[in-house]
Length: 112
Length: 112
Image (cartoon, rainbow over all chains, first blue to last red; front, side):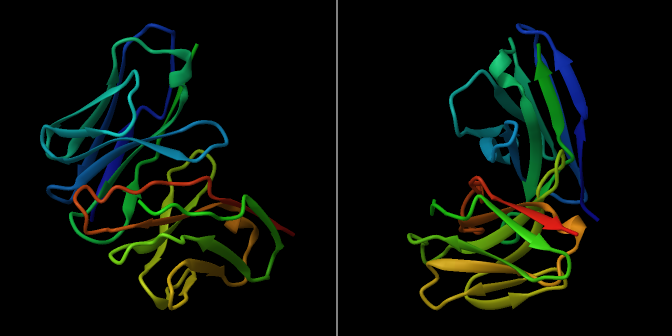
């Protein structure tokens, strides 16, 4: 069966520090991969999505970047975190055609 | 991407049926309607997806009128554990990237 792993679950980072969040998917090949962010009490904002290795589409200009070095690995990064980067970060995957998304358990990032 | 409008919040009681209506006036021919459920500090969970008329699974029913400009998620006999945020999304699951845009969702509170 397909599973999605996301880590760490929680993270507290100082302003100006780098960030690396990792997401891996098992049990499927060539999935679509996504990074979402959810601010406290708000809806989900799509940050990046990828349809294949090395293919990244950015939805909003910001202090973050994404990479897909392997088929089932999706990484969210930042060189210097801002206070406004705090939030709940969710990785998700979907099959190539049809169906819905499967989300990871999320990473709660607090920038202090 | 079709924009959706749904109530901000709804209250209900255990054992009652909860109906959440979502408006999507500019839905496109290839768009499907998908509903997700999100508990606090967790990623959204796929509930149901449909294109027209009625879809039913073990969790919910989805009613879509002929003009497809709205849809209603029906949760039968809710329990306290159904307290969550419910998101209505409209999009083409076969489109490249299959990216979905989440709105603010409907916060459902089930009371004893």
